[in-house]
Length: 490
Image (tube, rainbow, N blue to C red; front, side, top):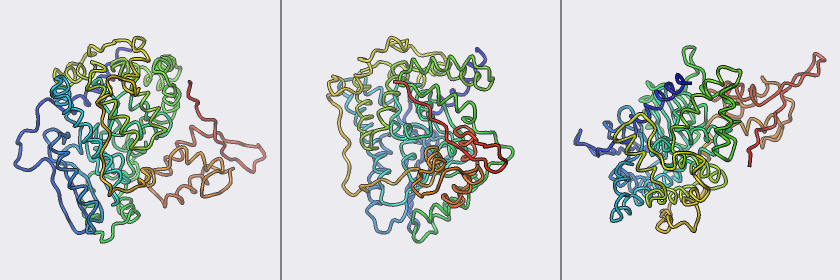
């Protein structure tokens, strides 16, 4: 158990190192923190604080929003591309400054205004009328996820490191996390939101958080080809990215969250109470399968390091987010952020100070310290319209030139488990009958996705977990049958 706790600590230390630090951007160059380019029909923004892994501050948001709005209304703009200088796309937001401002009543409004600006920018990018491509070639965390994850094209590479690390600092996943995490396959989103664990490289693609995977060395070629498109339609952009995709190589590690571990994850994180999730993990930590046991022990160690209040608030937000639109989810998260700024929990200040300022490796002094001491009334402070901590909560203010219908963030991604299940059951919108063999199921999705790279592996992995083989033992016909899904407890 001690070994696994140490392993968990090492894995999460990288998140700590790449969250926003106390210092604001130094003048490491004379260039502005966001660069803008116009090349033929392509418009590109590049986050330019490499010394801070392009972590967002208010000055960057103030530069981004007006330019993005200008491009959205320009007839000359055909597509928008987002990227970052150096080792990260964007490693988070200026939470140290947020906490410092929130500590004083006279400056608290600045903290709330920062979140409002950030979430508005995220929604504007999600609602662009132009095709939007984000190159996640490096660290993509927290605030960076908000800029990227709502785009119709999200490109990961072997350098991609994706995380929502908020519970690690006593806060709650935001920037639309309650919307997108709740729509990932199974309980992957719940797991990522509560643990703050990181996904890397191809795992980001196979989980649905990225729509494409290409080698990092091909990113310059991708940008050149996007730039050369005279009429950059969504399908044309998809074809360009797909041509540069690469199959899983023999020397690549297997997916982290697949097979037996993935089945255990879906079971443990299906509950609606954090205490029940912990009980599920404890049961799996005694499992006869060594792989499941090691994963459960590591996950328990990680969860025990997180803020109990943050865990409960995050789970409530993710469950609510499943039923909300992106705009509704962002407004809910703005209320949660406002409650934190107004002191609904001391853990945000405690976590930022411990993890980002003092950089301690031990468990911060969370209050309450135990899950069982976080009451329903404590959680209600972040959601209830009667909460005294939400009286100053604003609503997002958005321009009227945005798309009224958002693009489907999964349209160009690998097929979801839900879609695979619908084909197996014969209820897919494209028609077809049930009773497919595995090879027929794979062929069907390769046709539906136009030969997309990674489809074969995704369909085969899902079928191995979610389907049973039906064999009449007559030597003639063997087909797949979809198993019953894991049911969430009340």
